[in-house]
Figure 1 (tube, rainbow, N blue to C red):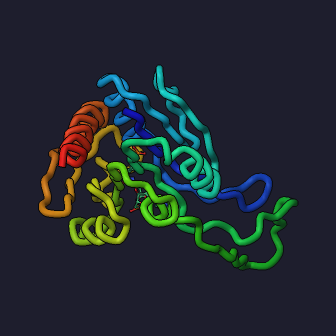
Figure 2 (cartoon, rainbow, N blue to C red):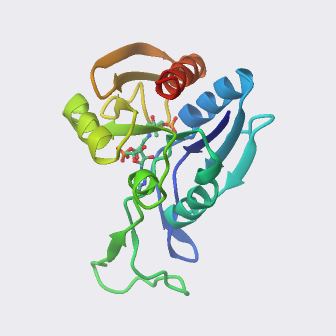
Length: 215
Ligand code: PMT
């Protein structure tokens, strides 16, 4: 099977030396990639900047910005059976990227931000993807309700939700604990190392795809 995974953070440049980013390490997405490779599938990993080694046997596309990730996903999604969006994509990017380093002038500086493309949100609609679509939801409150809203709005088959208000799971941790939000029910997986959880999630997503395509 051909499977696309997005992982890691994006970096949105402000000027030649500064950017907006977040604490995603890429560990969760890379662990799922490892699980799927181990199960014998073709994995295309589209990743923002991380310190991780590129897993053996994946096709790898390195990106920096949300716009670059969107372009890479748009280019490859048509050939995929499954798409899994684990990346922590910036929702906003500076309206203008200054060509010179911004100088210290007044006491305050206002940065104007504009929306980035909603990559997961465009998969079904703009990109016409009909395969198995898995999103993630990083929430600090109302985990299940917010994840279920994303599931419906973005046409996902599954949203994997994590509570990122906890520092021992989620962003930049070696562990994660997730809710699995399906259209008709919700399950949970207890806290586990991301390396183990990646394999569990890979199996579970493959089962979901088999169930969907045997209908
Ligand atoms: O990388 P790690 O340190 O291992 O941490 C893992 C993680 C916490 C980043 C991961 O488990 C996780 O929660 N990933 C989703 C992070 C996120 O940005 O969630 P969100 O609720 O803001 O976005 C919802 C979904 O839309 C996600 O599938 C996201 O990839 C996608 N999205 C968001 C914005 C955007 N412009 N385009 C998108 O495709």
